[in-house]
Length: 513
Image (cartoon, rainbow, N blue to C red):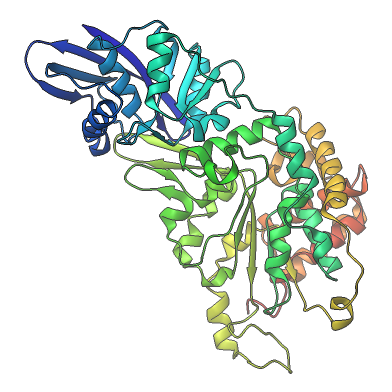
């Protein structure tokens, strides 16, 4: 007897439906074919124990299990339940009162028949809906994530016996449903980190607001204890709320990496990733023998924070240059290519010198000019060029620290940022891949950042005096456009340009020789 059961394999952030064919023949043996990896080859031991502990067995017949398409490599333990159900129905131990062909079945089995969570539940659910499957049966821990997709029934189960009873006795399974509006609202009203907690630093908060409104990359330069990390952690709380499409994109990436369990299954808040400076280039951009998303993809639609930027290996920072421009990263292997999205805001922080203090006569540690140059040379010019806003952070004076008054809350700032982003969305409706100012290309800059003669003269003087590159010129115009959007101004003027020029600290004399 031949039985077909359906599962799914995830490559990159997309799923491919896998057909598991189970054929029963005369003889003895258990033959699993179709390019399974070691975890799948070992599944027969888990399946045998799980079935035995639930009153079933793998019979002493010749079983051939083929995972089709046979030329596509399958990996992981998520096919245990798929294979087990195929064996039970093919060997006529249970009946098929509900048609197997209408369901995708995935899950890792424990020896007692309980189910363990799987990776990639959301991409699998999206693919199942696209291909017209009625339902998706998977471990309960992943059900909430898969249920985001409308138009497909999602059943979260705890034990293989529940699935057996569903097909054998037509005992209904409990359907999982998600209220997306409630999930989003709860996070928006109660941000974990709030700008109201920050004392002083009004000019830096202004910079953060501009960066959030235009999606600009930003670098904070200041001595230890000046509040760089504290400010960076609060940036996601003032970014516009995620749309459903952004939430799906972000959840897909975290689902593939097996990280959605930490977030309750759904990514309703913008991710904030802060890797340690010992990170490798593969861990940052993604890769491995079977490519997994890296930190820049896990930060998609959110913030990537690199604390103590010069401490990162130069080679690691250089691999970010292309993803910063293209907003995706392609990982190529001999047999396949995977593309992960990586549209993130880069927030970096650094001390101004190895000792942490720069041009401060009262500093406990002073660095020589040679040490300064060696320290700063770890950051390449091309990478700095891709950072729109450079701002110096100074320590907060005691009077501000001891002030009992709370600052402006993240919710109030976010309203202004969201309003500016809405203006940008309307402006860029005719451009497919441009949604906010930081994404503008040369064509959009020339169209939407026109300057009057006085502003042009001001920018020309700054360019010549600071010896700015052509890319820095474009960055200044983009930031000026965002400043104008926050004011609700249609045209750029000298005030917008002069403020944008102020945010290029590292281009000034005294930093890089």
